[in-house]
Image 1 (tube, rainbow, N blue to C red):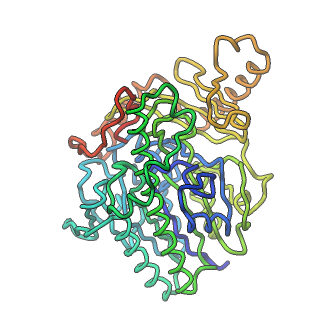
Image 2: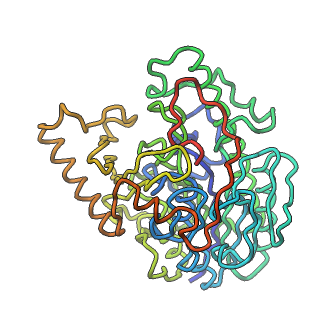
Image 3: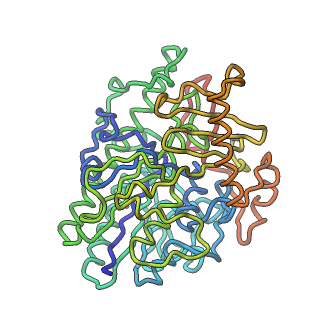
Length: 471
């Protein structure tokens, strides 16, 4: 078969609803919206482990968190098993990576040398392990000498991607390019002034779950955070438009699968939580738009559940490449290509333990077309009817529902699905101590200790919780 190129646009900390096509009309994303209209938008796409490094490890290895060993940030990914890029390289692809990596342990400013730690991205490399200094950034190529960026980082990263696409458009071999942009991850307001002003604070409308019992000064602080977040996304949309135009100019628009997604979402004050590592939809939900003219249905919107690990296996399959036997994600390529009957009944979400940053409770859960369910080691925690309660305001796991036969039956059904996933992934699901002891820096081959994390996080509104901060 003719092998398509793959352009995988990976954003950081972008929640699934933060686009015009998802209903937030004041967030002007015409290029992202056009991508959705020309392909398929998955409204029920989730991050298996909603934290930066664990999610990226899953994307690039096709393994669940406990298998690729990055249970939290600042751990080095296991690199002696299958990889996304390695599988495609074996099938004739040239594989390049631009942007945030966050899979080489610490320090965050460190250099990842050529070899297995790059997980098969051997054709092109312009990467920083982890930096969110969007106006004063840098990256490495083949030597441990940083190349500094003048201006807003996403623009420069897109410049590099356009240059790579133009070079590969002239070649015979297909390419797989990951463009890993750091925004809209905090700091939310670090961008050129003219970009920040594109989303006025006065235009921000807080969701109902983000405005309960909120004094005026805290309300204003929350709005300022959201305004910066949305401004980052509008600037990101500009880069999507530039990439789309390049594909057309180079004559490879129809021959390229374009994926637009994120590693995880952002609570942004909803449920009085910030950042990620939580089972609520704002944290686990991610945008997922896919376009492949003539193959992926145009203008389709589906609520079929799909997670990052299945996306990796499915994309490999869609190129005609054999999925490595050790990869753990199901092949859902038939679903992506339009067959709704191929949708899974559930996908797996989890957060094993927080070993470095402010603690988040260990949880395991499932997402279906209709429900989100999560347990802690102490038992059932959250159960939401996502159709009747899309803002997840009404947790059905309550004392009042303990004798409600419908809720009890539903909880037992979802519990069974969840424990099927635990068995399948060999997950011990304890209080986190076992995982913490096993995966602390130094316990996984080649893991490097973290330096003190940089103090780039913006101040939170007074009185708010910072669960998940720093991931």
